[in-house]
Length: 447
Ligand SMILES: Nc1ncnc2c1ncn2[C@@H]1O[C@H](COP(=O)(O)OP(=O)(O)OP(=O)(O)O)[C@@H](O)[C@H]1O
Image (cartoon, rainbow, N blue to C red; front, side, top):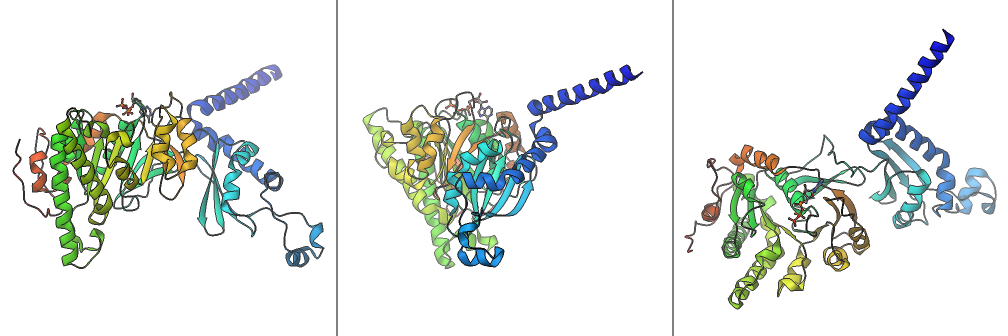
């Protein structure tokens, strides 16, 4: 009987270990919550003081403080680490809020993030300044980008779309009011289309107008036609669509002037024109020059896009440009346009120069991270912005059919924009137009 009990106990223990091993690989969230988090939290608490000390993140207390607290001479007291304000476990990691003592700055903690990661045995440590004097250490317990699962509850805003997951487990949000224009770069098969697909999936549900420019004959954006207000599939069509957008921008500025406000969001809701997002897929195809005559069109389009990028934010027209490279080889004015596209997402690239094109001017520290993206990780990218911050992200795998279904479901949100009507892609059933007013008259398209 005793032998049987021992065998059953051993069997139960082995099954438990096997189950945990299985969970670690197949359900890392569950494993983290059951095992990883309690272990990491204990390890953190136990080794906090010494780890911060060896990582150079302690300061000598002031003489007065040493005297007040311990009533001893300053040289006799130990250096003190940042004070822990809060420690919170999440489904992907651990978030620790620290008050930075005088003598340290957030950059010191950020510089030590690799050392902290190894000391506490976590997958990554990201340092974010949450308010002056306070930093958050966002640790992830496992590689959350291996299989992306977006958090269930995401706080979105009027022009904010969740597109990908960040390495620290938080969603990567595309906020058009904060960063109006953006550039997505990456080599072949790196995941650019997947990024735009996720973006369209989010945007399709918002009250915005979507304008597609896909000079690969519409193969990428064609399936989303029911939700598009316009789709240009050749450079000539794109040229005309951009002309309409410039006219729309000017008309919207007249409206702002009439109501003495400086941006679209300050207008009363009933007068506010619908925001427009212009999605350019593979920008090199758009600026392609086959014969000398095309150069004039290309230069005109670059200048139209530069004008939109410089001014259209205030009137709610936003640019989302995607390409393999974006350098001076795209023609006159291209680098000027790139400078205006301040949101940057760089997928795997073939050379350092392309990573520098995307991130060198906004987040130089991120260039190396972009060149280190593995070929077997499509969809992984480095996202930087004009504030110099950057993060590693990955989009969830989403099929074109899934996004096409969302576009059909939300086709009733296509705004009434008569000037763009000639460019409206054909769809099986034309939905009833809704949304904000258009400010310019329909044009006759001369083919
Ligand atoms: N986040 C992701 N997770 C898993 N697989 C992905 C992810 N993103 C992209 N892929 C896969 O990688 C491949 C290339 O993706 P995608 O077509 O988006 O790349 P691309 O950069 O647009 O390529 P191209 O420039 O050749 O059009 C596809 O098979 C896609 O399913």
